[in-house]
Amino acid sequence: MQLFWQDLVNGLLAGGIFAVVALGFSLVWGIMNIINLAHGAFIMLGAYVAYVMFTAWHVDPFLSLPVAFVVLFALGYAIQRYIINFVVRAPILTTFLLTFGLSLLVVNVALLIFHGDIKGIETSYSGSNFSIGSVTIAWVKLWTLVAALAITALMQVFLTTSRTGRAIRATAQDVDAAQLTGVRVAHLYAIVFALGAGLAGAAGVLISLSYSIEPTMGDPFVITAFVVCVLGGLGSVQGALVGGLVYGVVETFGAQYIGTGLQDAVALVVLLVVLTVRPTGILGKASA
Amino acid sequence: MGGITGNAIVVRITAALLVLLAFVPLLHNSYDENLGRSVLMFATLSMGWNVIGGYTGYVSFGNVVFFGIGAYTTAALWQHWHSQSIALSVACAIVAGVAFAVVLGVPILRLRGHYFGIATLGIALATQEIISNIDWLGGGTGVTIRQLDDYSAYYYAMWAVCAASMLASYLISRSKLGYAFVAVRENEEAAAVLGVNPTRYKVTAWAISAAMAAAAGAVFAGANGFMDGPTAFAIDNNVFPIVMAILGGVGTVAGPLVGALILTAINETLWSHFPQIHTLFFGAVIVLVVVFLPRGILWLLAVRGGWKGVLASVGAYRV
Image 1: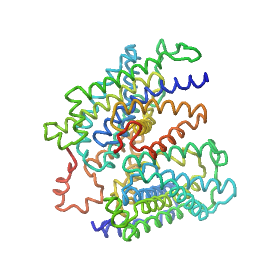
Image 2: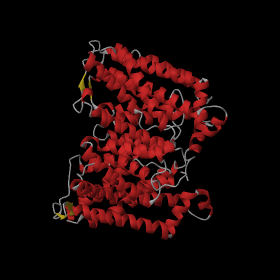
Image 3: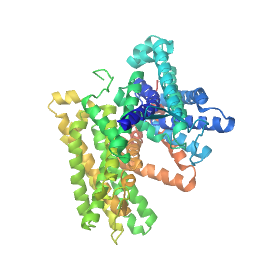
Image 4: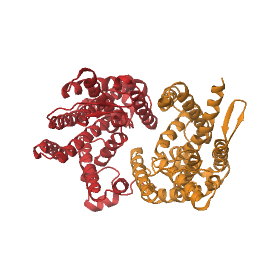
């Protein structure tokens, strides 16, 4: 039973990161129908922002969160505005291929600049942890979860209360109607992609605290983002949060009870079951 | 472009290119032979993907699973029965691949669009993990396969698999089956109303797709001489065929081979001239092609009005 609680806590702590990983991916996919394969590359860039800030100026990674968000936001805006917008109305495969090419570009530019060796961030509090009963919790993971929840909440507030947020949700419902009411779609799409990239950057900072940093580190998280979006339901902030936490728990239990090599397979089998039983996700609406 | 077969002249030129590829081993140059076999393998995978993703419009992100199953069939035949026969392993691989496609296809092909794509990706990843954990199939260490003394046999086998796949793609595109696939792609409900059973045709398309990929995998495993999870289910074998089909022209007969030839040529040229940054260039090439030729290279031949027509259509999908 002690192991059960420890796994549950570990799963939820990991799930917080997965929620932020999926948040931006879900936004871009839900609003523009783009499967952004460069999402992992943006996560990697976010991790390097944290790494550079930490090694060059001893800035705590948690303080790098806004910096990474702004840097990736600007990059994302430019990419959507000057590249993706040219083909954004094309069939889904076109943008799929385009973001694949962008991902190769970004990862290989990073490889040129940072080289392929594995780096890590070792803070003064990296090794410390505390216990509640028999459950041990690392401080880093707890603060990561807190930051993840804060980012998710901020995103929800932004989308529901701000003028831009309402324009984004209106565009998701009906592009043409939104355009008629004065939404500048090209600009708005660029904002959406920029938000997606900025959130990926923030996720990268959080990931840099517990994972090793190298140019291809982001690639597996694209698949995580996929799975989380499907689990939680596409295009909603709550969906990404619930999906992320569920995925974290399922993966941790899978590793514990079925085998370390098989945790991804377990998570993917759960995904297939969810897809077959409830194709719109746990929180998704009944019709897609 | 006429129907889904595509431009008839292009199909003939592509078929002629394929015939020329049959003579590569006569050059007695192992570099050329390996490169040629790689083109044929990717073209076959791309043609397989094109049947489900292009003709039928169900974009699969996990077709590498059939390639992997085919490759492991060869590995298992050598490991447990010491069989080096290419024909036997291709035959067994096709049976295994089709069986897997039919069993999984019935539930999975109910899903549409992205959800189908993700489900197929999930299947590919899960299958790799599961197979890598089966000791009978070499587990995590993999299987070493003894190769035939006549190494060119693998080349001719891959050529035969590719030629058969192209012939099948051509015949399908001109048959009632092909029209049913396109009907499903264009409007599944309307197709169902008109008496086309969508599930049956989707599963058929996926099974054909699986047979092509599995056959290519079976030959590849022999030529490679070693098989483990990461080799059999390599991400490149999943993504490159899709890129090639799009580059050549999705849903056309000639597109996959044209795409495979062009992409391999670009990749090799960049690799030999800029080894440090060739992947970076490769990414840039993909971005440029997508922005300027979103409908593939073969589509250029169908544009009216010469260069003005091409320029006018750039940005046809912009906001």
